Length: 198
Image (tube, rainbow, N blue to C red; front, side, top):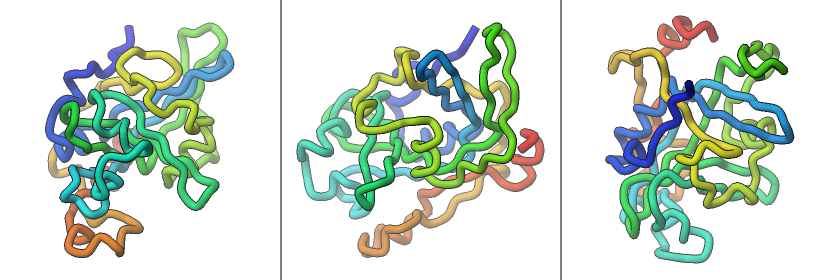
């Protein structure tokens, strides 16, 4: 029985969610195939006061999903070619989200639907690579992740200790003035990754 993260999981503080997502599994179901991988790096974006957040310029057609109910996917394109997957957090009318930056331990469900096989030789160390490999694009924007259809996140079966979570500055936001100094990028330590069998 899968343990799909419920809406309540996403209805909390964004920084806490960004940490709690580490070790959880992102699952993609597409054209009869199911792939899952462990989330190993995230970034938090929190409110209109966060100059690195897309909502810092207010409510727009692009950011409308961020102002919606938590637990939905926010998918956008950068550089006109790469998609990025975020999960909307907190509460309705407050724009916040967590960017999924890195995945590890990639697995494909076998035909019998009871077992998983590892996919080796693939490194998903960037939001663009993640979306390309899992075929995530704007068609999945606003998708309800709590429903467990097409794309969802499952609870981790292991406990991630606080000492195994590293905090650092977010990437590619030099324009964000003082907000670029926030330690809102979270990743699993090398020791924690070794334990997961990466």
